[in-house]
Image 1: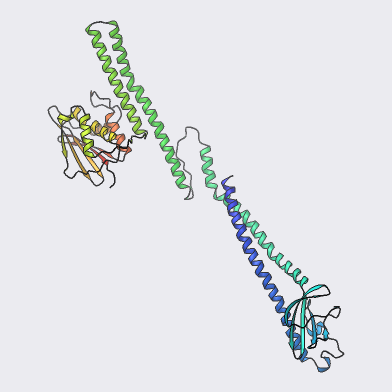
Image 2: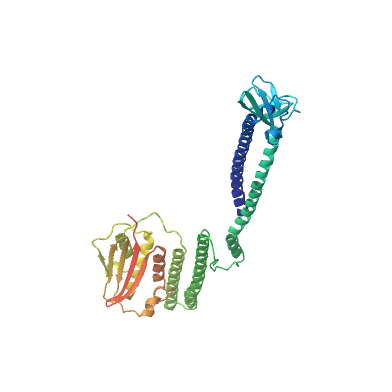
Length: 439
């Protein structure tokens, strides 16, 4: 079932129920008011006849030879009038063609049968006479049916018009959704441009925004795959070629030269393995794969693990923890926090001046912890600072794969941290800022 039909059925059913209840209530009140009006006409006619009888000359009063007609007494059309004595004798009638007289023994309103026809009568007693007025109930029903029909037809027409307007209104109201559906269906399989439909109702803007965010994530995922494929093809070609050449040399030579070729091939294989592992790790971090193993670690615990993992850091890194360092655990998997800090220490140890030590300061402020790694290397230019987190970029003839700082930057972006590089008089200062868990 379409959304348009569903909305039309729900709203249409609601309108039909409400209009039906309102119409039934109105017609019920109209019928009751009509019956009261007709009864009031009976009573008013009886009172009028009683007043006219008093004003008639003595010779024309009931009981004389002169006949009393409905026109003479001013009886409205459709009513019959009867004047009788207190003993029940009929003195005069406006419609003498009736075979049976009206029953006037009971004053007030009553329903009675005369000549097999139902009548509604009203009797009043004045001046020693009973004046009775009556009208036929079938005529009342006919009048009531015509009035109710005249009132019901506009209600039915209005209800039908309301349903038609509701149908067109729902169709017009869902037009932005139809335009959005059409825009999505017209897209090609490789089209990831954001939707730009305007104007849109406030209810559909979040849908368009979430759709554009989905397109953006898909585009980033595809771009990551392309970059991974390109990087792997570019960076692995040289180690593979070198390994192949060394193996060929080892096959064509013997002795020390063959052993050296095999050793070089082994180094190339180790470098190839390291590069592949870092590429896969970078792809996992950027691909939002889970690293959560249910473990937690404080900043100081992460520092100790990173110093143990970094080559030569235990003897050449000075730890400077703040006295007020927070004991709250980091709001991220310890394995990634340790990896990020270890990569920074490896980079600092690789570029610090010979005979100097790397300084690692740890402090916390609010819900953030700061790791400051300072080496004693040469200052970097502005262009070089911008290239530090680029994949496979190496300064000079460095031996690394060029992925260490790129992995740190990916970890920082994933978990809402910050990575900052500052040139100082004593070398490069790297500030790694990571979030702490809430209290």
